View 1 (cartoon, rainbow, N blue to C red):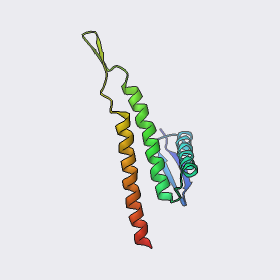
View 2 (cartoon, rainbow, N blue to C red; view 1 turned 60 degrees about the vertical axis):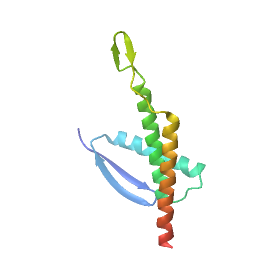
View 3 (cartoon, helix red, strand yellow; view 1 turned 90 degrees about the horizontal axis):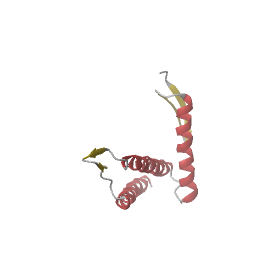
View 4 (cartoon, helix red, strand yellow; view 1 turned 120 degrees about the vertical axis):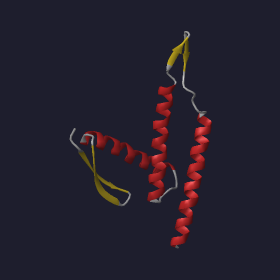
Length: 117
């Protein structure tokens, strides 16, 4: 497979990447990421580019994880005529964990911003 290239110009940073994916695929995931950043920007008071990028990354990871959980609810084995599924973590606990991570990230970033002042 040929390498695809993606030119990124986002949050005050510009660079190019290459990956073993098509240009079309790279542009599709980049567009999704940009859209997620814009959603965070419009629905919160977050203005700092690093925070926007981190929160968008967490939201996209949350999307991926929830999709994986959906796939994991399908039976993975049938033993003695009984379908068995993988154990799925409680979604409330996952959300609480994500919230704690965002609070820790905010504290770290606030500390760095104070050191700059």
